[in-house]
Length: 150
Ligand code: ADP
Ligand code: MG
Image 1 (cartoon, rainbow, N blue to C red):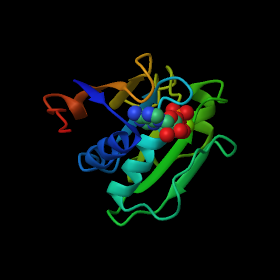
Image 2: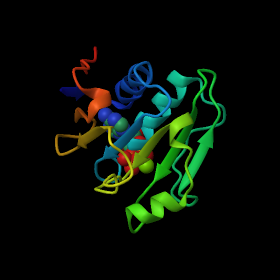
Image 3: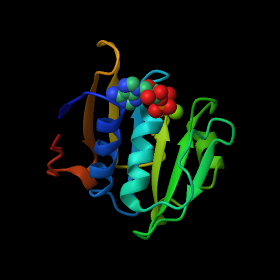
């Protein structure tokens, strides 16, 4: 499903809406170039989950964990400097009890999860426009409608 995003606030709202579909055990992989809006989207997910603390780019710490009002922890990973799925494994993430959002996920998912949601952000259009594609992979997302309002 493709969503035409018009500005940063719209991207944030998509995150809030996405959060409403997420539960403990879910893995969300964000792909898109620098400045695409991956952190902006994650901030929206954080708001939707009632995350404690500021959701900000985890570039220098690899992963940040937020407790949330909704229950499951929000684990926000920046995989940019991770070399492999093995290193993601090294972070010792409690996948079962968390909602895990990974920026720069690339293909690290192989071997770490059976199901995931991939969010690809295309920023090739002019200035604030983004084309976002949300795709479910695996049993968890089979038959789940991924339509989002605007
Ligand atoms: P990333 O994490 O992908 O590097 P960020 O969310 O940190 O991206 O930054 C995105 C930047 O682009 C922000 O400065 C934001 O204001 C700007 N921006 C412009 N248009 C959009 C949009 N439609 N969605 C998200 N961010 C946008
Ligand atoms: Mg970022």
